[in-house]
Image 1 (cartoon, rainbow over the protein chains, first blue to last red):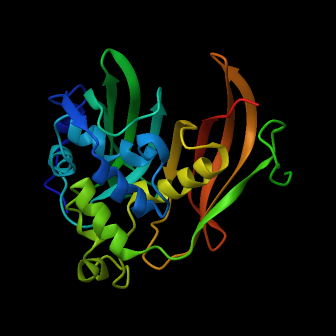
Image 2 (cartoon, rainbow over the protein chains, first blue to last red):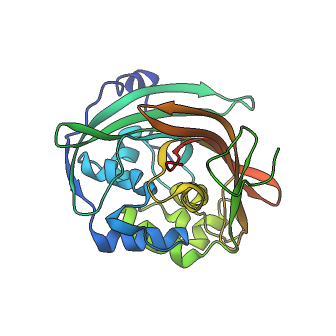
Length: 145
Length: 143
């Protein structure tokens, strides 16, 4: 379930910056994603708001796999979602190249009431359309040890 | 808490958002979603692996899809570009075949940079219990 990180190694993740990069949401991808939510495509090339899960991760130059590796976890049941804070400064559209930057903003070890140890892992990514901020995500994960 | 208003022009705190229901969470959609997300996490498609996790051979819906049902409720209510902020926490996992309903109500109204905003408490329910809870800020269409 885990490759294990010492508490010191975990602390050192704070401030880690992702490579940065760009991402263009194509029509087919938005169509399939929206269909997965159980609704029809949005009009005018608007993308479904839940693109803010995978688009920032891939656009900033990382992946779910790499994030798991960074946090020292692998395997079924090793990661839980704690929560999201997603801000939309402008509506997001298909076929726009968004630039992204971000990094790890918090990581710390906790012991729950039952004595189990897990780590909180928080990363933040900002999307830009040109020089204008388009959106910002803060994702909180739980890495189980 | 009041009934769903007929118009967004006369919203008040406490007004309910018309609910949105996914009658049966579809494992085929989870597989498509896993591919779109480039998500190798097998809990979304490998029933055998999940049996070892005590999930009785079922598969786990992606968190973004659970949030997506709440978003669909908001889009159906206030329009396709209404979402300004989503702040949510996840509880128990949603599994294939589950029936879930997104619900919410207005908690406050204000104007930001000339745009009318409604702040809403939102949640996703399964069998009457919350599996996602949070707050949404939506822009309201001009009256």
